Image (cartoon, rainbow, N blue to C red; front, top):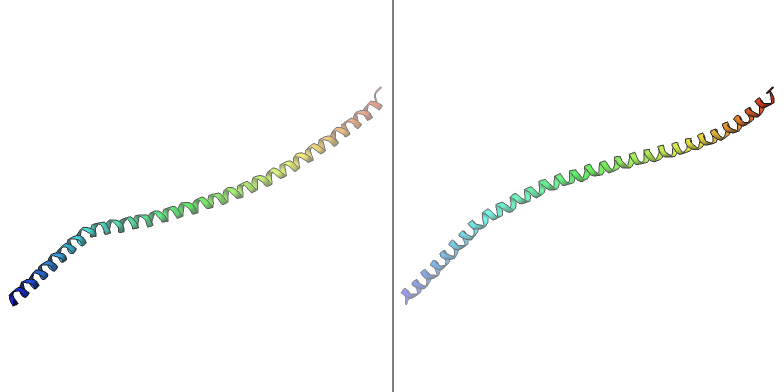
Length: 109
């Protein structure tokens, strides 16, 4: 009877040792996969930084383009105002020219 109990306990111990060996083997097979995941996380983190930098550069570029657009709009408004002034001055000059022609005709012999 004691012999049977010992054999059962030895069997349980052998089964436990076998289970632990299987667990260790599974852990050893998982470790390279965990390392690969960690490496990929590092790559993703590095790429995240690059992407954030590119977004910031694009944002700065957009701000510069917006500022240039405002300058162009302002310059266009100034040119439009100047064109209107030139057109008005041309009209005034035309009227003066007509008056001068009339005055010169008075002195014709």
